[in-house]
Image (cartoon, rainbow, N blue to C red):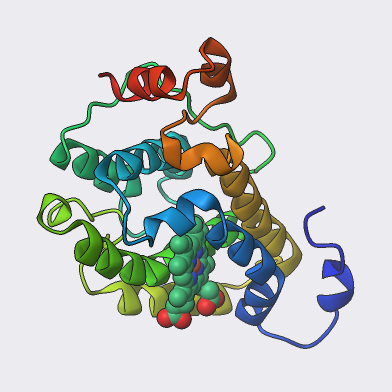
Length: 231
Ligand code: HEM
């Protein structure tokens, strides 16, 4: 259980969004504090580090989105395909995606449950807010080479506020959602993404791979990075 005091807190009168914010804030802070996220904002950030991060995000988001879209009539869907944005960004910076690259699995989440889906959408639609800060920082620090390679962080091209408000309204107004399941799902996504991105601890910015199995193929970070991006 990622949120120890959740059931106590859920008995207090509060909107679902406040609950989501309150219970996932530490998880957000933990993900923001990851070395690979801190590096994203660093003045000496490099394109190769950015490529590794985009690959890692793709390995997580592609299977997640595929599970979300297996229920096309479900109410909660992401407003755009983040994995398509990631693929476009990778292509723009000249990196190939390996067809056998490791993908995350989400066996503990029930994608047929709208409360679970709402928690997932909260996390990823919300991430487009911080994405604006990240996009501006990347453009400032990396400049022209990423001018057309920030689609993931700027997935709504200036409409993130509108999409975010729509998501919040949908979460607050959809009848029958279970706040406890929603918060658990959001916390699980934050937690599993943090682990996924931090697979090599604070060496992530040296180009290490996304998966444990790839990690076992070689202890040489460059060899594993090269394998991952198909160099
Ligand atoms: C360097 C990494 C990150 C930074 C600097 C960052 C920054 C921010 C900022 C500044 C906001 C508030 C924006 C506003 O109120 O207008 C925010 C909100 C949010 N971010 Fe992040 N973020 C980062 C990573 C992430 C990641 C990886 C996720 C999840 C995939 C995420 C999910 C969220 C969510 C769900 C919210 C909305 C919280 C709410 O108001 O309910 N963030 N982020």
